Image (cartoon, rainbow, N blue to C red; front, side):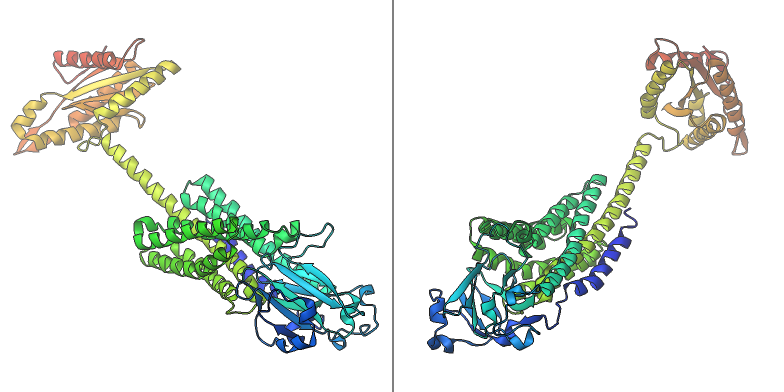
Length: 584
């Protein structure tokens, strides 16, 4: 699965590149009219002004064509007004003075699309009546949904008949936190179509995020690594942030004043916190770059401040910190990832690409929030699309890291096995050492007793070995030991264990071999070594012989008694003149 992960994540990536722009593209048809084309704007009005004053002739001079100005409200502009007269000639047949627009199946709506759906506090639509007054309709993030009310990601009003009488309608927007918006007239069918398109696009985005959560959870179960945990938390935070900031909580539950705004900032802060923690862990910045570690750790702490400020209702604090972090953090992460790539960290390549995509989307989204860019389908959806693409590449980075960790783990296991082998092996002869003998012989004795099978032991040493060492030197003596090891290997099975017991004494234990069979094996070793040991040194012929003692495991034997009986048999062979085998 890990090996093939890059294929399906690349498929997701291609899907996002080619499908999402079409899904999120705004419909440009006569069934949608941008208020900027037909409306006038009274920016930063006195919040105390009511419809009576604003609609009076003396206030008309405060309105001017919207043009290309951003339509927004917030802390420094707590209330703004739009005035518009519906252009009946652009609505199609059946609309005009005296027409009953409310009876039409495809009604016209006034749609307000904020950049932050759940922080546009109050929207008031005033539609003129025949008696000179106005009908007032109210929506907004601070206005609780009524039972049975249709829910949408945006705010929309069904336009009553009075809106189609050729007289000005007024829209008042107010908010404590800065929020840009687009306002348009749309038929109910075109609005429903655009909503369906956005649900399809976000269904894909949420599907990718959920898939990444399960994917990283699977990796976590397969190979415990802290980054996988952080990636799970990061994706959960990202998904819930999108869920609130794009108005899907409002779609499912309606407007819940206070809670919606709090959850927006809670998950925005968690998004920042877990994203930076995941970065620190994945790029190993605590070890590889202390400077970036402290910078991103500070950003993670500020993410916590964003969440806390949202809980206590300090929306402005959350707004400012989160927007500047949205620009600053991706930039720092990109530099840190580029540094790790330069240092040879292969998985950081995918990490770098993913954060570049997020940075592009986040930059556009933050610049929109800071009123540098206008509200449109691209800027509103840039961040979610960037997040989805980033999640794909982060998953590829994790898969690559998983592969790297598996390779490193295998190397470590091989190194451990190698050093363990060295600790249990005699470097001169290649035979097992005394430590191995004492460890494995006991295990072999227990197994033989359990399955009621024979276990035999051969103890042997080179006859007159001290004389050989003294007369010809230790190099010749060592050479003789190597030859003896070769003879033992040539005459025993793979599952027989030959161990250097001490000096020139060797022990061979052989599972499922009886005393008589062990005696025959001992004789083969003896005769083989007698030939193998022949040397010509300084023109003289030199040979060596061995004496062997054989013992078979008996009830009640311990390692010591078993070895002692084999040792006694070997000394009995020496007493018989050496170069022979004795079984007891």
